[in-house]
Image (tube, rainbow over all chains, first blue to last red):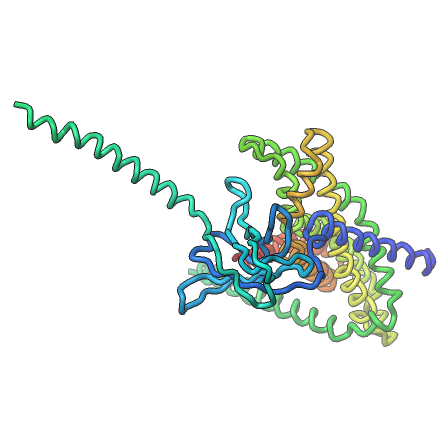
Length: 167
Length: 262
């Protein structure tokens, strides 16, 4: 085989590899969700982040408006600090609230933004004042169990206390 | 007493031999790297080897990828269906292919398809005293014969692994969406939300590059050190497949522990 022909087939082979990688990155991977749109950073403090991860989406009304860029712990207030990369095309009032929500019963966690009514908008490096922590399923279950157990206890105690009174 | 001494002596010889082998292997790697200038000076040589190693392996890699994707689709559906989350099939197929199966199965096939041919070629060159003749003509056989083959293998392997993963995902899609009837949109969107480009795809590519280096180098080493007889070449070819596959599986465990341990 001549040199040109070999080079042609090798070029085709490498091209196929590049096509495969682009396919993996765009069709199978999340490269298409990387946006290079300008962003502004907003901080939010939470008592409990739950299972929130870096690069988790920030959604408002179900639309992705940004991503969680970093998670750290404030050792003075003993609270978790999540830094959110918000896309500049979406502006929110200064008194908007952030809450950590779960998509579905067992899905991944994301930050939900509920817009407030202030005229001033959230600016670069501002802090979201109103936050709501993640719901920890185990705490809910244990609360429910304790409350139902104490109800049962009082329900049983009442007749038990009444019986000795009977002769 | 005599058999005891001989037995212990044989154990010592085994240890010494394996240490010697590892040293010679590392030295060959260093020599090839040091003489890699030829790959830039005469890219035609490397291109010829990519054609021989890569293009001719494309068919077996693509067909195996397709069938691995089919099987992943069927088996994944069987398990996921029990939990009512068969839409996650795309995620399962894509993650297992890009992280593990793509690089590993490609490297195993690569050792069988391309590694053996490299070993046999170099071993026969040695048996036919072509390498000695080159040295007489003041042509360095490591530079002229081994180095282009090394770079050809290292370049071809990631390309083949990427093709394997792509064809496998298409195979999973064929079984999941066309045959079983999972919703196509859910199949792709679950995959896109779960597969990270840097964490999963890029680490898979890195793995395939390392496997390419390991398998190609083992094949070249076995050919280079083959006994110049028909029997020696056949043994070297067998050893290429055995130690190449074992090296790939062992390295895979190490790399997975390093990359995905968090």
